Image (cartoon, rainbow, N blue to C red; front, top):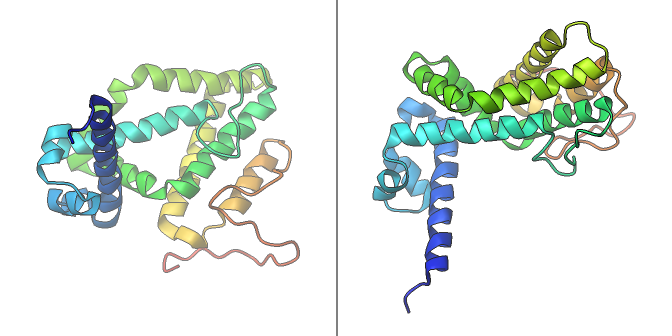
Length: 229
């Protein structure tokens, strides 16, 4: 029996997403240069020709991975995308919105580390930095709006320089992401999240982040990050 147009649409969306997720995983494990279309389609369980059909080639697939990261990044600025952390509407107090941004950013690190690892590498490698810069230009309005949303929070909190506060918060969170990429599970992500909350005078989180474990009371030991895991 022939599939309906709706069934075809769903099948296309599934194949597209399967390829994107497979690319993220393969790029994270083997690097962009070391990954092949065959590796990606094998993991996705689809024919090799579908990469060209959906994306146009490997370079366009890399661009789609970067676009997925930008979509995640812009959602973070709105406090979206992480359960059980709910989006923080603009009419909530600045402290609530700031906590949501911190928790969403670090929560995404806990559950989307392969994507983070891929994009950090793409930003730094001379052969792919131009692809990242092109994606940044595609999302420039959204990025500026996200920056302004965070700066508005610091402005409400009475910061003397909201722009620099936003830049330093982004630098702090990016640094934590980088440490998680290097040190993996040995990096104390939940403890780092609570340190950030305290640094900004925010209430202690009631529950640990999804994907990050909180030590049982009384069982904490001094964390020591190790790249060897």
